[in-house]
Amino acid sequence: MKKTLLTTAIALASAAGGISQAQAAELTISCGAVGAELTLCEEGVAAWEDKTGHDVDVVSTPNSSTERLSLYQQILSANSGDIDVMQIDVVWPGLLANHLLDLREVLGEDVAEGHFETIVTNNTIDDRLVAMPWFTDAGVLYYREDLLEKHGFDVPTTWQELTETARKIKQAERDAGNDRMQGYVFQGRAYEGLTVNALEWVASHGGGNIVEANGEITINNEQAAEALDLAASWIGDISPKGVLNYTEEEARGVFQGGNAVFMRNWPYAWALAQSDNSDVRDKVGVTQLPAGGDEGQSAAGLGGWNLAVSRYSENPELAADLVAFLTGEEEQKRRAIEASYNPTIDSLYQDEEVLDAVPFFGTLYDTFTNAVARPSAPTGDAYGRVSNAFFSATHDVLSGTLEGAQAVEDLENELIRLKRRNW
Ligand code: GLC
Figure 1: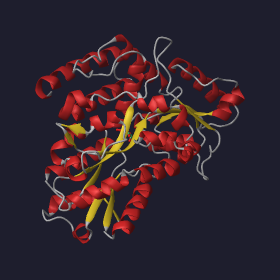
Figure 2: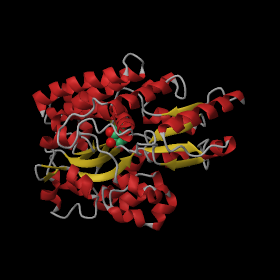
Figure 3: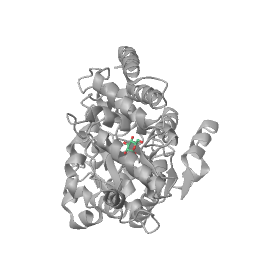
C-alpha cells in the first residue's frame, strides 16, 4: 500500500495519535521515488510480506534529499513511531543518530559483515550501527557514444576538454537541425545534489573537500574558485539556464530524451537509459568524471542510502527484520540487475549476472570504492547547515551573482561561524 510522506507529516502535525492507515499496517517504510526507486522498494517489501505474512505500508518521499531531510526531522522531532523503517542518506547518520536504533543490538554483531567497511563506519555513531547499507552511489559521466563517434571526439578526461567537446557537438547538432541539443546537464538546483556536483568540481581541481576529515575548513583556495568559475561559464553555453533548477530526474529527462551530449548522474540512470522506451538505448557510455585540468584528478562524490529503524517504532524487531531482508544479498543483487543500484556487498561486484547487467560496476569499481565523501563526519549535526551554505554559495556563482573567489571567501567566514557554534 502506498501514500505520500507528506500526508503522514500533515497527519502528524494535526493529530498526535497518528493516522488510521498506518495503524492498520504492522509496519510502515518510507522509500525514495527517484527513477524506479519506489517500484523496486515495493517489490522488495512484497517479497518480505509473502515470506513473513506481515503487512507493510510503503510511503514515498520527495526526490530532493534536502526536502526529505526536513520531512524526516519534522517527523522524528515529534517522537512519532508512524514510520518504522526509514531510507536515510549517507550524509545523515550523524544528524539523526539519536532517533535511530542500534541495529547490532537487534540483529547481532556481525549483521554488516561483507558490506563495504567505509559505509559501515560511516553509519556507526558512538559505537552504534544506526543504519544498514542498502545501496551506494558515486557520480559518473554519461556520454553519447554515437555523437562522439559521429563528430570525431574522444571521451573527455578533463573538465576543460568536456567543455570544448560539448560546445562543438552541441553546435554541430544544432546546425543539423536539433534545436534542443544541449552539451552538458547536471544537478544545479540549490539543494544537496549541487553540494555533490560542486564538491566533485572542487576536489577534481585539487581544491580539497570543503571541510577536511580533521575539521579544517579548506574551501577558500584558488583551485576551488577556479572550479566554480568554470562551472559558471557553462550556464547558457554548454548547459541550459534551466540547469539551475535541475535535480537528478530533470537532467535524466533531457539526456534520455536524446537532447544532451553529456550528463553527470548516479548509476541508477543507466538502467533507465537502457530501457525499452529510452531514446538513447545502446547509444550511451559511462565513465569516470573528468579531472580538473592536467594537474587534477577525477573525483566522484560518494552518495548512497541506508535503512534505519526509528527508536519510536512500536515493532522494532519486526522492523529490523525487514531491514535485514531488504539490505541482504538477494535483494541487493535483484536491485543491481533490474535497476543498476550499486550493491554495498563487495562480493556482488564479482557476480557475473550483475556485471552482465551493469558492465561499469566492474570497470569503475575503483571509482565506487574511492569516492569522495561530503564532510558529514567532521561536521556532525551541523552538516545540514554546512551543505546549505556550500550549495547556496555555489548557486550564486552559477547564476552569475558572485565570482568564485568572493564566494569561497564568504563561505569560509560562514563556515568559521558555524564551526564556532556547532562542531
Ligand atoms: C543521491 C545520493 C545521495 C545524495 C543525493 C543528492 O541520491 O545517493 O547520497 O545526497 O543524490 O541529490
